[in-house]
Length: 180
Image 1 (tube, rainbow, N blue to C red):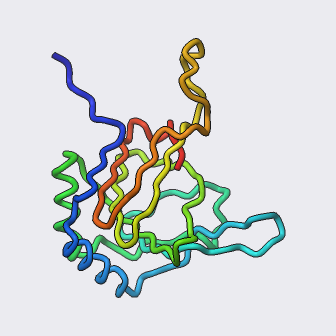
Image 2 (tube, rainbow, N blue to C red):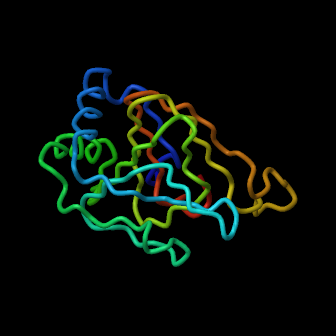
């Protein structure tokens, strides 16, 4: 029997219990490393709007050329010891290693992560803390089986509500097939 492939997405709504999630959120909010990131311009010539801050630990991911330099965050150094236990727990779950952590802190309920594709070479594990958030993944390309026509680019392939303490992980094999 061949090696069984992992699912393209793994969702664990109660990965952290409420106390663990509360403690982690408090610790993160107290960090001095927060940087503004992810500005967007609603229309050319209008001011850039910032919707969240970010912290990055470990090697920084590459940015696409379209991201203005002033919105690119830099690494704050190695992953802090306070996060090593959580990192090991996630690595054991997926039998792989993660060398970076990025944390996004949204300003309020109106802030969004604008549609984009991740161009990472490994799995992406996302831990949701604080208020519930809706997370939508869309197909990036039309269905390759043209005769079946099961989906078109832009169609929703997954819509989830991420509660406080939820873990959502996207398998590296499918990173280029979806946009969030």
